[in-house]
Length: 368
Image (cartoon, rainbow, N blue to C red; front, side, top):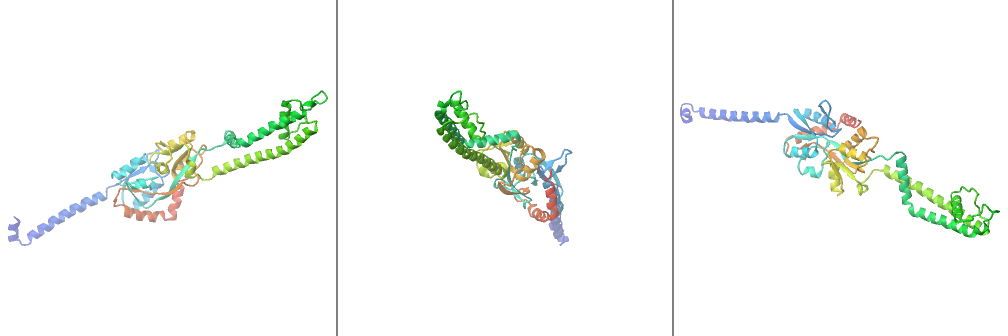
Protein backbone atom coordinates (compact mmCIF):
# COMPACT_ATOMS: atom_id res chain seq x y z
CA UNK A 1 0.00 0.00 0.00
CA UNK A 2 2.84 2.32 0.87
CA UNK A 3 4.44 1.57 -2.54
CA UNK A 4 1.20 2.46 -4.31
CA UNK A 5 0.91 5.69 -2.34
CA UNK A 6 4.51 6.41 -3.16
CA UNK A 7 3.81 6.13 -6.93
CA UNK A 8 0.90 8.55 -6.78
CA UNK A 9 2.13 10.70 -3.89
CA UNK A 10 5.93 10.69 -3.79
CA UNK A 11 6.09 12.54 -0.44
CA UNK A 12 3.34 10.56 1.31
CA UNK A 13 5.60 7.80 2.65
CA UNK A 14 7.99 10.27 4.20
CA UNK A 15 5.13 12.20 5.77
CA UNK A 16 3.53 9.05 7.23
CA UNK A 17 6.82 7.92 8.73
CA UNK A 18 7.44 11.33 10.26
CA UNK A 19 3.92 11.37 11.71
CA UNK A 20 4.43 7.89 13.21
CA UNK A 21 7.71 8.92 14.79
CA UNK A 22 6.13 12.04 16.22
CA UNK A 23 3.27 10.05 17.68
CA UNK A 24 5.66 7.59 19.34
CA UNK A 25 7.79 10.44 20.68
CA UNK A 26 4.72 12.25 22.03
CA UNK A 27 3.54 9.09 23.80
CA UNK A 28 7.00 8.54 25.27
CA UNK A 29 7.35 12.13 26.49
CA UNK A 30 3.85 12.13 27.91
CA UNK A 31 4.47 8.89 29.77
CA UNK A 32 7.78 10.17 31.13
CA UNK A 33 6.27 13.48 32.17
CA UNK A 34 3.40 11.82 33.98
CA UNK A 35 5.85 9.52 35.81
CA UNK A 36 8.07 12.43 36.75
CA UNK A 37 5.16 14.44 38.08
CA UNK A 38 3.72 11.61 40.20
CA UNK A 39 3.80 12.50 43.94
CA UNK A 40 7.05 11.43 45.58
CA UNK A 41 6.78 8.76 48.28
CA UNK A 42 8.69 10.10 51.27
CA UNK A 43 9.30 7.85 54.28
CA UNK A 44 9.51 9.69 57.61
CA UNK A 45 11.44 7.91 60.36
CA UNK A 46 9.40 8.46 63.52
CA UNK A 47 11.92 10.02 65.95
CA UNK A 48 11.18 13.46 67.45
CA UNK A 49 12.11 16.21 66.85
CA UNK A 50 13.26 15.25 63.34
CA UNK A 51 10.01 13.63 62.27
CA UNK A 52 6.98 12.38 64.19
CA UNK A 53 3.28 11.72 63.87
CA UNK A 54 1.13 14.24 65.74
CA UNK A 55 -2.08 13.20 67.58
CA UNK A 56 -4.18 14.88 64.89
CA UNK A 57 -2.57 12.70 62.20
CA UNK A 58 -0.24 15.35 60.76
CA UNK A 59 3.49 14.73 60.44
CA UNK A 60 5.87 17.35 61.76
CA UNK A 61 9.53 17.78 62.65
CA UNK A 62 12.66 19.64 61.65
CA UNK A 63 13.47 17.17 58.85
CA UNK A 64 9.89 17.41 57.58
CA UNK A 65 10.15 21.20 57.55
CA UNK A 66 13.40 21.00 55.64
CA UNK A 67 11.90 18.58 53.12
CA UNK A 68 8.90 20.85 52.50
CA UNK A 69 11.26 23.69 51.63
CA UNK A 70 13.34 21.44 49.37
CA UNK A 71 10.24 20.03 47.62
CA UNK A 72 9.01 23.56 46.98
CA UNK A 73 12.35 24.41 45.38
CA UNK A 74 12.11 21.23 43.27
CA UNK A 75 8.50 21.95 42.33
CA UNK A 76 7.43 18.42 43.23
CA UNK A 77 4.38 17.04 45.03
CA UNK A 78 4.93 14.36 47.65
CA UNK A 79 3.25 12.04 50.14
CA UNK A 80 4.66 11.57 53.65
CA UNK A 81 4.64 8.01 55.01
CA UNK A 82 5.53 7.51 58.71
CA UNK A 83 7.77 4.50 59.41
CA UNK A 84 8.54 3.38 62.97
CA UNK A 85 11.64 1.20 62.43
CA UNK A 86 14.95 2.36 60.98
CA UNK A 87 15.60 -0.97 59.25
CA UNK A 88 12.23 -0.72 57.49
CA UNK A 89 13.20 2.77 56.26
CA UNK A 90 16.54 1.64 54.81
CA UNK A 91 15.09 -1.53 53.29
CA UNK A 92 12.20 0.41 51.73
CA UNK A 93 14.52 2.96 50.12
CA UNK A 94 16.80 0.20 48.84
CA UNK A 95 13.82 -1.59 47.22
CA UNK A 96 12.57 1.71 45.72
CA UNK A 97 9.40 1.50 47.80
CA UNK A 98 10.18 5.11 48.76
CA UNK A 99 11.65 7.87 46.61
CA UNK A 100 13.40 9.31 49.66
CA UNK A 101 13.50 8.99 53.45
CA UNK A 102 13.83 11.79 55.97
CA UNK A 103 14.21 12.07 59.73
CA UNK A 104 16.97 11.17 62.18
CA UNK A 105 18.89 9.18 59.57
CA UNK A 106 22.62 9.36 60.22
CA UNK A 107 25.09 8.66 57.43
CA UNK A 108 26.95 5.48 58.39
CA UNK A 109 29.15 3.05 56.44
CA UNK A 110 26.64 0.26 56.96
CA UNK A 111 23.78 2.30 55.49
CA UNK A 112 25.91 3.58 52.62
CA UNK A 113 26.28 -0.01 51.51
CA UNK A 114 22.53 -0.12 50.78
CA UNK A 115 21.36 3.42 49.93
CA UNK A 116 22.64 6.78 48.77
CA UNK A 117 22.49 10.04 50.74
CA UNK A 118 21.89 13.66 49.91
CA UNK A 119 23.97 16.63 50.96
CA UNK A 120 24.14 16.57 54.82
CA UNK A 121 21.00 18.12 56.28
CA UNK A 122 21.84 18.24 60.01
CA UNK A 123 24.95 18.11 62.16
CA UNK A 124 24.73 15.22 64.57
CA UNK A 125 26.77 12.64 66.45
CA UNK A 126 26.45 9.66 68.75
CA UNK A 127 25.95 10.59 72.40
CA UNK A 128 25.28 8.84 75.70
CA UNK A 129 22.75 9.53 78.45
CA UNK A 130 23.02 8.22 82.02
CA UNK A 131 20.68 8.11 84.99
CA UNK A 132 20.66 11.06 87.41
CA UNK A 133 22.06 10.40 90.87
CA UNK A 134 20.48 12.76 93.41
CA UNK A 135 19.11 12.91 96.95
CA UNK A 136 20.27 11.43 100.26
CA UNK A 137 20.49 7.89 98.92
CA UNK A 138 22.79 8.98 96.08
CA UNK A 139 24.95 10.99 98.53
CA UNK A 140 25.34 8.03 100.90
CA UNK A 141 26.03 5.76 97.97
CA UNK A 142 28.81 8.04 96.74
CA UNK A 143 30.26 8.29 100.25
CA UNK A 144 30.17 4.51 100.69
CA UNK A 145 31.90 4.05 97.34
CA UNK A 146 34.73 6.38 98.38
CA UNK A 147 35.07 4.73 101.80
CA UNK A 148 35.32 1.34 100.11
CA UNK A 149 38.21 2.64 98.00
CA UNK A 150 39.97 3.78 101.19
CA UNK A 151 39.64 0.34 102.79
CA UNK A 152 43.40 -0.24 103.33
CA UNK A 153 43.92 3.17 104.97
CA UNK A 154 40.91 2.68 107.24
CA UNK A 155 42.12 -0.80 108.17
CA UNK A 156 45.55 0.57 109.14
CA UNK A 157 43.88 3.25 111.26
CA UNK A 158 41.76 0.65 113.09
CA UNK A 159 44.82 -1.54 113.77
CA UNK A 160 46.73 1.43 115.21
CA UNK A 161 43.72 2.43 117.31
CA UNK A 162 43.43 -1.02 118.88
CA UNK A 163 47.23 -1.27 119.33
CA UNK A 164 47.28 2.04 121.23
CA UNK A 165 44.36 0.94 123.40
CA UNK A 166 46.14 -2.32 124.26
CA UNK A 167 49.43 -0.51 124.97
CA UNK A 168 47.69 1.97 127.26
CA UNK A 169 45.98 -0.87 129.13
CA UNK A 170 49.25 -2.75 129.58
CA UNK A 171 51.05 0.19 131.22
CA UNK A 172 48.05 1.53 133.17
CA UNK A 173 46.25 -1.60 134.45
CA UNK A 174 48.17 -1.60 137.75
CA UNK A 175 46.71 1.81 138.64
CA UNK A 176 43.16 0.55 138.86
CA UNK A 177 41.94 1.28 142.38
CA UNK A 178 39.11 3.18 144.11
CA UNK A 179 41.42 6.20 144.30
CA UNK A 180 41.99 6.12 140.54
CA UNK A 181 38.53 5.69 139.00
CA UNK A 182 39.68 7.47 135.84
CA UNK A 183 42.54 5.06 135.31
CA UNK A 184 42.64 2.79 132.29
CA UNK A 185 42.08 -0.43 134.20
CA UNK A 186 40.80 -2.76 131.48
CA UNK A 187 41.29 -3.53 127.84
CA UNK A 188 37.88 -2.07 127.12
CA UNK A 189 38.92 1.17 128.86
CA UNK A 190 42.11 1.26 126.78
CA UNK A 191 40.28 0.98 123.45
CA UNK A 192 37.67 3.50 124.62
CA UNK A 193 40.42 5.98 125.57
CA UNK A 194 42.11 5.52 122.17
CA UNK A 195 38.83 6.23 120.30
CA UNK A 196 38.04 9.30 122.42
CA UNK A 197 41.55 10.67 122.00
CA UNK A 198 41.63 10.04 118.25
CA UNK A 199 38.36 11.88 117.68
CA UNK A 200 39.69 14.82 119.78
CA UNK A 201 36.63 14.62 122.05
CA UNK A 202 38.71 14.30 125.22
CA UNK A 203 36.05 13.63 127.86
CA UNK A 204 38.72 13.14 130.55
CA UNK A 205 36.86 10.25 132.21
CA UNK A 206 39.78 7.93 131.38
CA UNK A 207 43.30 9.35 131.62
CA UNK A 208 46.80 7.88 131.95
CA UNK A 209 48.40 8.03 135.41
CA UNK A 210 51.91 6.81 134.69
CA UNK A 211 54.74 8.47 132.83
CA UNK A 212 54.75 5.70 130.22
CA UNK A 213 51.00 6.07 129.75
CA UNK A 214 51.30 9.81 129.23
CA UNK A 215 54.07 9.30 126.70
CA UNK A 216 51.83 6.89 124.77
CA UNK A 217 49.01 9.46 125.00
CA UNK A 218 51.17 12.21 123.49
CA UNK A 219 52.34 9.91 120.68
CA UNK A 220 48.74 8.85 119.93
CA UNK A 221 47.46 12.46 119.95
CA UNK A 222 50.01 13.49 117.33
CA UNK A 223 49.39 10.38 115.24
CA UNK A 224 45.62 10.87 115.50
CA UNK A 225 45.82 14.41 114.12
CA UNK A 226 47.75 13.13 111.10
CA UNK A 227 45.48 10.13 110.51
CA UNK A 228 42.23 12.10 110.79
CA UNK A 229 43.60 14.78 108.48
CA UNK A 230 44.66 12.20 105.90
CA UNK A 231 41.32 10.39 106.03
CA UNK A 232 39.14 13.50 105.83
CA UNK A 233 41.10 15.21 103.05
CA UNK A 234 41.30 11.97 101.04
CA UNK A 235 37.54 11.38 101.28
CA UNK A 236 36.75 14.98 100.30
CA UNK A 237 39.20 14.98 97.38
CA UNK A 238 37.94 11.66 96.03
CA UNK A 239 34.28 12.72 96.25
CA UNK A 240 35.16 15.98 94.47
CA UNK A 241 37.10 14.10 91.79
CA UNK A 242 34.18 11.70 91.27
CA UNK A 243 31.76 14.61 90.87
CA UNK A 244 34.06 16.30 88.34
CA UNK A 245 34.45 13.00 86.49
CA UNK A 246 30.67 12.57 86.28
CA UNK A 247 30.32 16.11 84.94
CA UNK A 248 32.74 15.61 82.03
CA UNK A 249 31.52 14.11 78.76
CA UNK A 250 31.77 10.34 78.63
CA UNK A 251 34.04 8.65 76.10
CA UNK A 252 33.79 5.26 74.44
CA UNK A 253 36.30 3.89 76.96
CA UNK A 254 33.95 4.86 79.82
CA UNK A 255 31.24 2.56 78.43
CA UNK A 256 33.20 -0.65 78.97
CA UNK A 257 31.63 -2.82 81.65
CA UNK A 258 28.35 -0.88 81.75
CA UNK A 259 24.88 -2.17 80.92
CA UNK A 260 24.26 -0.38 77.63
CA UNK A 261 21.00 0.16 75.75
CA UNK A 262 20.20 1.41 72.24
CA UNK A 263 17.30 1.52 69.80
CA UNK A 264 17.42 -1.30 67.26
CA UNK A 265 19.31 -0.45 64.03
CA UNK A 266 19.95 3.11 65.27
CA UNK A 267 23.21 5.00 64.82
CA UNK A 268 23.87 4.32 68.51
CA UNK A 269 23.51 0.58 67.97
CA UNK A 270 25.85 0.70 64.96
CA UNK A 271 28.42 2.67 66.99
CA UNK A 272 28.35 0.12 69.82
CA UNK A 273 28.77 -2.72 67.34
CA UNK A 274 31.76 -0.96 65.77
CA UNK A 275 33.28 -0.58 69.25
CA UNK A 276 32.45 -4.24 69.99
CA UNK A 277 30.51 -3.27 73.11
CA UNK A 278 27.64 -5.46 74.27
CA UNK A 279 24.25 -3.76 74.51
CA UNK A 280 20.55 -4.55 74.82
CA UNK A 281 18.42 -3.62 71.83
CA UNK A 282 15.03 -1.91 72.26
CA UNK A 283 12.25 -1.20 69.78
CA UNK A 284 12.76 2.57 69.98
CA UNK A 285 14.59 5.29 71.91
CA UNK A 286 11.70 5.85 74.31
CA UNK A 287 11.78 2.20 75.44
CA UNK A 288 15.55 2.38 75.98
CA UNK A 289 15.21 5.53 78.12
CA UNK A 290 12.46 3.92 80.20
CA UNK A 291 14.83 1.03 80.93
CA UNK A 292 17.51 3.53 81.95
CA UNK A 293 15.15 5.42 84.26
CA UNK A 294 14.11 2.15 85.94
CA UNK A 295 17.71 1.16 86.58
CA UNK A 296 17.64 -1.69 84.07
CA UNK A 297 20.48 -0.06 82.10
CA UNK A 298 23.44 2.17 82.97
CA UNK A 299 23.53 4.21 79.75
CA UNK A 300 21.65 4.78 76.48
CA UNK A 301 23.54 5.52 73.25
CA UNK A 302 21.78 7.31 70.38
CA UNK A 303 22.05 10.28 68.03
CA UNK A 304 22.59 13.39 70.13
CA UNK A 305 19.69 15.53 68.85
CA UNK A 306 16.99 12.91 69.35
CA UNK A 307 18.49 11.91 72.70
CA UNK A 308 18.56 15.46 74.08
CA UNK A 309 15.03 16.12 72.91
CA UNK A 310 13.65 12.90 74.44
CA UNK A 311 15.39 13.52 77.78
CA UNK A 312 14.17 17.12 77.98
CA UNK A 313 10.61 16.19 76.98
CA UNK A 314 9.98 13.14 79.19
CA UNK A 315 12.96 12.13 81.34
CA UNK A 316 14.45 15.35 82.72
CA UNK A 317 13.96 14.27 86.36
CA UNK A 318 15.57 10.85 86.02
CA UNK A 319 18.11 11.08 83.16
CA UNK A 320 21.06 13.41 82.63
CA UNK A 321 21.06 15.23 79.30
CA UNK A 322 24.02 14.10 77.16
CA UNK A 323 27.14 16.24 77.22
CA UNK A 324 29.19 16.26 74.03
CA UNK A 325 29.32 13.40 71.54
CA UNK A 326 31.15 10.10 71.40
CA UNK A 327 31.66 10.48 67.64
CA UNK A 328 30.59 13.30 65.29
CA UNK A 329 28.28 12.49 62.39
CA UNK A 330 25.85 13.99 59.88
CA UNK A 331 22.23 13.30 59.04
CA UNK A 332 20.94 13.40 55.48
CA UNK A 333 18.06 12.37 53.25
CA UNK A 334 18.31 8.72 52.21
CA UNK A 335 17.83 8.07 48.47
CA UNK A 336 17.76 5.00 46.23
CA UNK A 337 21.01 4.45 44.38
CA UNK A 338 21.07 6.37 41.09
CA UNK A 339 18.16 8.60 42.11
CA UNK A 340 17.37 11.33 39.62
CA UNK A 341 16.48 13.61 42.53
CA UNK A 342 19.95 13.74 44.04
CA UNK A 343 21.59 16.54 42.02
CA UNK A 344 18.72 19.01 42.23
CA UNK A 345 17.99 18.05 45.85
CA UNK A 346 21.61 18.65 46.84
CA UNK A 347 21.53 22.08 45.24
CA UNK A 348 18.34 22.96 47.12
CA UNK A 349 19.71 21.72 50.46
CA UNK A 350 22.93 23.68 50.09
CA UNK A 351 20.97 26.88 49.55
CA UNK A 352 18.41 26.24 52.32
CA UNK A 353 20.80 25.12 55.08
CA UNK A 354 23.21 27.99 54.43
CA UNK A 355 20.61 30.62 55.36
CA UNK A 356 20.48 32.20 58.83
CA UNK A 357 16.69 31.94 58.75
CA UNK A 358 16.84 28.14 58.50
CA UNK A 359 19.33 27.90 61.38
CA UNK A 360 16.89 29.79 63.60
CA UNK A 361 14.04 27.49 62.55
CA UNK A 362 16.16 24.39 63.15
CA UNK A 363 17.11 25.49 66.68
CA UNK A 364 13.47 26.13 67.57
CA UNK A 365 12.61 22.44 67.13
CA UNK A 366 15.01 21.33 69.87
CA UNK A 367 13.18 23.23 72.63
CA UNK A 368 10.36 20.84 73.66
